[in-house]
Length: 553
Image (tube, rainbow, N blue to C red; front, side):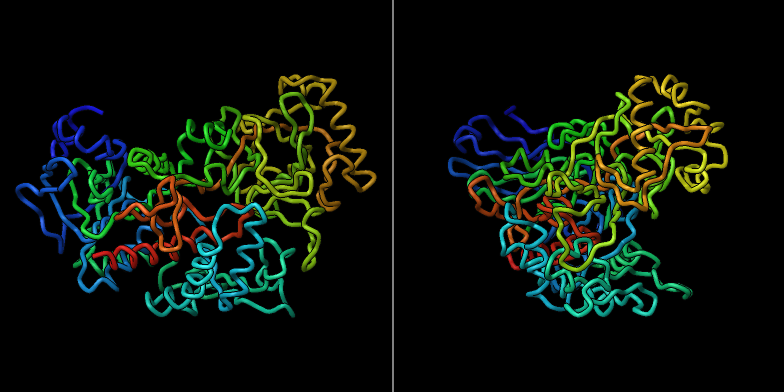
């Protein structure tokens, strides 16, 4: 470690550092956060003393708040709102890295999971986590308890118009599939409820049209206690070497004291190809949402010694269509029916290599408590592999192959283009041999693959990868088309380990005082995933972490 930090307020002598027995003082540089002028916060002049075991570390705090929240997605906003509503005047800095929130919340549909039967929903969470779950039961139970609060918090506490929302209420074992649970095979799926702010059908929406809009409006309404900044990157965490407590952070070049805690809501590392390769083996994958989730918060927490979990878990992957230069997606990935059902996907060797009816969340006809090991489809990128439902590692590039009837059916939606050839979205040919040459794949392999596929379509059974019969669209009528497809996904879930109180843990399983998390930054999801579960987690652990920090005086 250098004798001085990157920020002058955190400078310490080498002698002091040695006396502190090498304990980390500050975290990773390079995190980001953003904002408006401070309100309700006391700017601190002079020097604040932080006692160490062998000396004194002098810090000149530029600002001081009760709670500092890094990241202004749904998790960060929920945390800041909780501080404002329940903190009895406690001050909060909400710092966003970009010029506006650019993680996943603004791009998501905004559906939120909720429950009314806490015990049954906790059981559904445990069923999805599976027998090899690394998320402890008490954390899953805290999620379930928080899910029972979601509905009232959004519609009663925050005042979202209930009549303007799309609401699917939890049901019972007598009608378990009414809310279309992601995993109807599990016994307690009936306990799932879902709502979406501003999504009522055939009704004029006068209130907020998205949960992000609702949350931001509440941030603005509480500007007396919440200082909301954009373009304010989190650069370092400040750790007291004597107590191990996180006492503040460096945000946009300023040393900010957090009297009660720092809540990390910086999202995942979707837009960091190196981290994607290191932790998920998928550096070529591209996210469907924003570009700001680059793992900055992860680096800061690594520097102060947190433990990590679920680094390989994502909402993905599926092979999604791109333009021929691989610069953009050619259609909304979250679309139903899936464009991928109108053709087949082959690798650069010309062969099918997986169950290629894949997209955001495709489910075949499933009965309540059916056999999950025999089901097929893609459920947020989880697919059947040997009877289990992991993510599958996917190649950097494949090809989506279809024919003229497939194009007309929606292989590339008409809303995307009326001329996929002229817009350079596909290569085309009148024979499969010519198409293989245009794709630069082995001609004999592609010819064989297409012939095998068409035989499956004729017989009504995909004997290779078990696609449902109603997705067996032949590739037989020229002209033929091929489109580049790459691994796509929504978000990562990995990050620092958190407990049921939202505290971030060290490698020995002990809470790191003053450090909390919420949302996809160290998400609790460790098995298969229920749609709407991440946004719900943002609200649930945003509240939990804020309450834990407020209780830490």
